[in-house]
Image 1 (cartoon, rainbow, N blue to C red):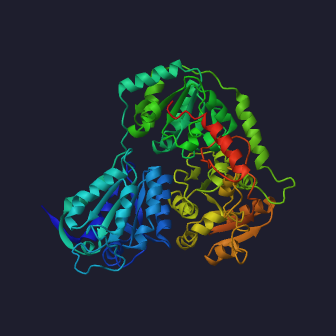
Image 2 (image 1 turned 60 degrees about the vertical axis):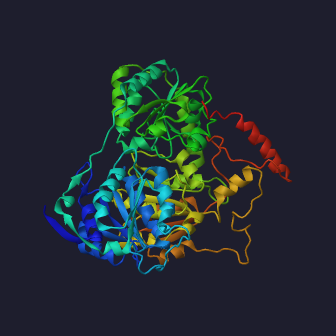
Image 3 (image 1 turned 30 degrees about the vertical axis):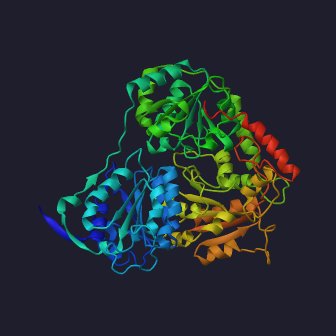
Length: 609
């Protein structure tokens, strides 16, 4: 057996550089790295040595780097991913939030934090967590509950099994999610005689599991028996490359479609059968049909509470859920008729068996009425002092073409975008709402641009999320990956302030002007963005915003536009109840009244159906 002598770190990066996806492209788009004493000597030297065969990207914040890597994977429909390496202490724990985000959203990312010395000779080392009762614990154990696969590399030869296991998880349609390989810093530098066969190029083909035939038969019977079926398209449609298949299936069998946050853009917004968004942030057209549907066809969705209206949306008598999902865990939720299989393959099999069967047509006036409602709330302002989020969305929409990708994550904007954004092409809508993670937006936009360099990327972010994490704006300038960022400054956490007030509470500790302070907050976001190298400006009206968007599109680097907005209004059209527990006891009448309304709404919940 021919061998090659390499350090463990050199072996890792060489192995990773040889992994290909089903299209024959490198699976990894490189490695994000912030070096510290736990990875600079071992992995740092290895990454330098491999050069452009496995490029290293420098970020400004570990969580931001991981968000960029995760967004890259999402925008690539999980066909590509990135690696992220940090030192052993705060650099590592900074990534835990991102790991949770990837875990919730079933997205691949390889996290390689440095770890303590395996030989323990210099213990306790700088940044080492010491557990009085367990000598094997380090800060990296925080990753265990938010990793799909976790391993601690304490010997070089452990990589011979750990790396293939990691790749199997990263490329598996069911197990897909974050992998953490905690890499002891002394082991990174140790040499080993590696079999050359370990570094032979490997193609990881996209696996498309077929459903059990009995499950297919049950699904066919349910669809044929249904008088009012509705398809709910989730993120799995994108990851299975099944957008065209969904369109063909829906039209052949005349079944309307609603979209989750992750599924939005699976079907063009103007498709006659696309009723729009579903659930708490849903279109009135989609929710009206969902309420009366006798068969909910959940396609590639995990049926999160925003999708189901906290399980109070589906009101049809004797309605059933038909869940088509590659993950049995998701397919079996809520006593569904389960079809465990790939969305693309399953749609083809169902369509062939259904033949020319068609469901009843939905009243086209529902979609027409919803489009008119969207036109109304996104139109130019007619008298309001400050624009609403919806009006800003309308301006951005009018200023971009159908190839643009809008990116968002948290606050009120995801709800407004889910209702109002008109996605014309697949992957044109990139909103991380499984974890609703503030601070994802700009780093995520960078990752999307790296995955889709030929498409315009527009990040929409509130001032609260911008303040959480903005440093990767400087990285986008540094790397030459232009993103357009629109900052909506409503002076605080406007979304949660509205929720606070809607549950009977007083506006408290959310808006900057009513929070406890000595000096009023006066952040100059345009100046801040300019200091990081972006072109920036602040505009005072929606018309000025549209003009600024034109300048931004022509710019040669990242561009930031700031606009003041009203923190109170949100789109009243559409939407649905969401279960947010209201206190049973309060001295304030508004809370007590909200509690009565809450208890009444709870009676509509049907979680066991």
